[in-house]
Image 1 (cartoon, rainbow, N blue to C red):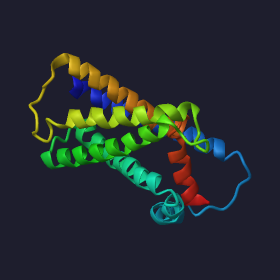
Image 2 (image 1 turned 90 degrees about the vertical axis):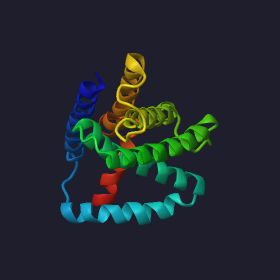
Image 3 (image 1 turned 180 degrees about the vertical axis):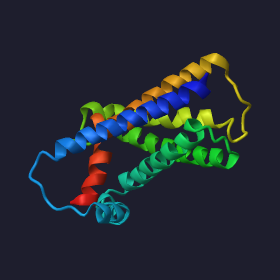
Length: 200
């Protein structure tokens, strides 16, 4: 069941996220035109993210380390999840890499969850309060789903009930994290922030 549902969920969410990105970029282009070095900005983005932004975030050591684990784990997990569960490349090495990425993301998400239990006044509330749960749902679901790929557990363990539960967890996670980046929600900051670093 999951071998059919997972690719559909992943690629549908990815397609809708791309559609949302095009829509959002069209919205940004309504302003006054200015010259932008598209390729140069994209090439400069990793350094601006890893160095410049990190220096700002590092003022709060707790959140700096949490952000590295959560965001880094998510990016790696998302790419690997598409390869492993989307395209069905069931390689044990990729399986272990995905287990590592989801575990890293899960640990970071636990720290985000802890901070949101009694958030400082400077933090946004509202939809942001559900983000830790979405991060945990995504990372935990993909971690469990990847155990058979890595050869840790047999294929089909847990039966239909666990499969249905994991399908719900994946759907929740990809909707919040993929669609939320471009259609609106707490993860919008990741997409908008990355492009801001590239072209401003």
